[in-house]
Length: 128
Image 1 (tube, rainbow, N blue to C red):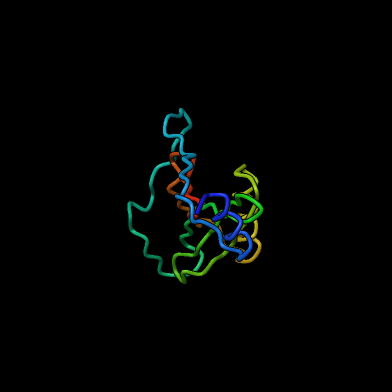
Image 2: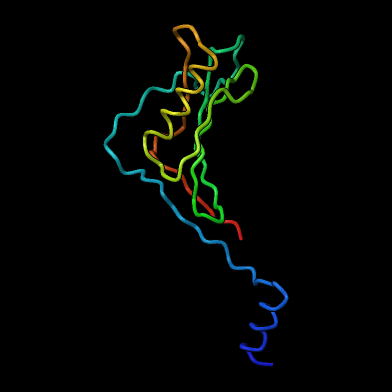
């Protein structure tokens, strides 16, 4: 049986081949941007709500293309305080998540937002 016959039979029965995962690196470690001091020093324990927040970005492959998800989590309750999903990884992605967290939680002055984004970027893997 030839490739064309297999291709036609697969299409006829709605069968698709699994492809190898694609790896896209968007991390840029070589930058001259200022890096804020690490105030937590890996101590992620909060004794009350809205003392310590942490954030991260991930990318998700969808049928329409890549989307980026930014999430802010309260380290006391481990609940999502704010999030944003955009088709791009611009500053608006983070500021929207932070704005949502701020308006939902109304923290007092002094809340610490920790992020490991000193490399200004993330790495993405497309699922098969």
